[in-house]
Length: 241
Image 1 (tube, helix red, strand yellow):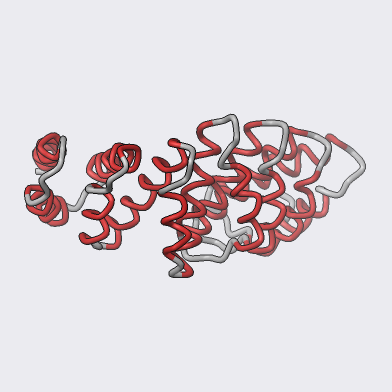
Image 2 (cartoon, rainbow, N blue to C red):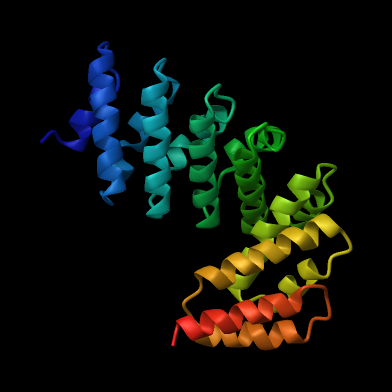
């Protein structure tokens, strides 16, 4: 089997077949959990490949790498540029890679201008990922004014997607004050999506202690539909017994 360096070198081949095969093998390695940090610069250079098949595999590879909390900083700028790709599969995987990378407290400064433009993407998943990535970017920098801009953005979907990402972050970090501020926000879009974020957290949590604490906390918040969330926690606790 070829080494990762050999595969990376084939990404520059004049043969489309070689480039496709190399991108597929790197994708498989990344999916299996192989550390590909050393070849991220090579993958980065190949993100402009004329073949959409190659581009899709490479942005998916970077997504898998970022999910493993490995360093993709060398590819942040070109991942940002990939958000303007004509193919939605490329844009989705590019934004997911950036979102994961930012969520793990890494810098994505070079991609932010592209992410801002993608808030208006025609694809809802790209818009959602872009909003989440920007939220994590501002949280990493402790620049909360940027988050407030997103929560008051003129597009309802951007406000909602931002609040969903933010409340999920607050829940994971144990910031109950932050959770309450989003669930009781004056804007309907913000609270509606925040509700979805809390529901997603409940559905994916396996920590009974934290779920019980969240239930007691939610009982003290007098806002619409909290009782539904409490019932969902009770149902989840039954499953976790």
